[in-house]
Length: 162
Length: 162
DNA sequence: CGGCGATTGTTTGGGGATCAAACAAATTCT
DNA sequence: AGAATTTGTTTGATCCCCAAACAATCGCCG
Image 1: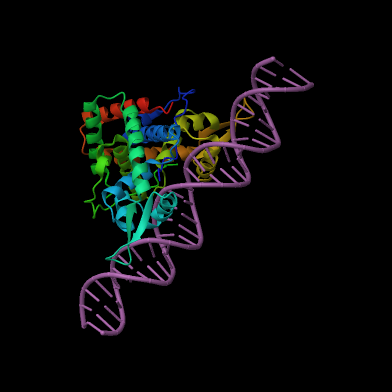
Image 2: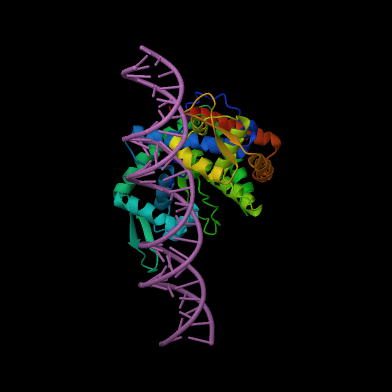
């Protein structure tokens, strides 16, 4: 998961580069911000000795809130191909955080669920995410944060790659 | 380049999933938005028969605005490792868009520059990016777009994975 | 009820992207 | 000069993405 493989924040030592149009491009600013946020997420978890990517966190939340979910439904919710999901679930399952149960109603699908250990881990992860969220929003008022989320949703609505 | 390998927008057919906390998490909304924007970018270029990622576009702009740039300086500006940059430049160079000239002052570094063909291509790419930008911001007023960019910069400032 | 099409999870194959470590060449510092 | 540092490459290890092919299973429809 976690598309932006860190891409940490360049120390900006030689920051006086001319970025031309880029600075006014929403897509560019969005990308850079996302990159910095990802790095902060990684740093937060690493500092706590926990290993998890933003994508994995989202996946775990989705599974725990929709127990019994099939892999197809989950893949659709995540916006990735079902074949991409397989190794990700393999890893999470190997870590003992979730299981692929047999669906009692449909032999083709797997009913995904968190293990008790997965539930516990997710609770801890959620606390870490809260810390992380607090940090990335530290320069924003709660009103600004709400505005930001609202505007981002609007962008997503407009982007829809039809 | 372009960390979020498309991750297209799920048709949201089975959209009635419970996303729990996720919807209120800035990091999550940011990730999804970035994903949709990336998909829109890809769709825009594909429709025009042009092949380019957001990362490549940013790189080209950086090079044309800072001709003679070294690979290290470019890598730092992009926030990636210098070894990651090598295959990316190889590809762009193979497409005849840029060249690695020998630096007259420092035998270790390469002086990057766009080829005439690269300049022409970038002009076209820029027009496509403008179209793309217009679409993703289509649900926002120009004031909202400015606000959004400002807030995103604030997030990036707060994130700084110190 | 029996078969055929659609769905699901997996595997395989092909692109890329990321970083870290090791190296040779060149520059800079001592 | 000699040592330390910098730069671009190569190699190695992970990881993500998608498309295509497959077997198993479900479901519809004659």
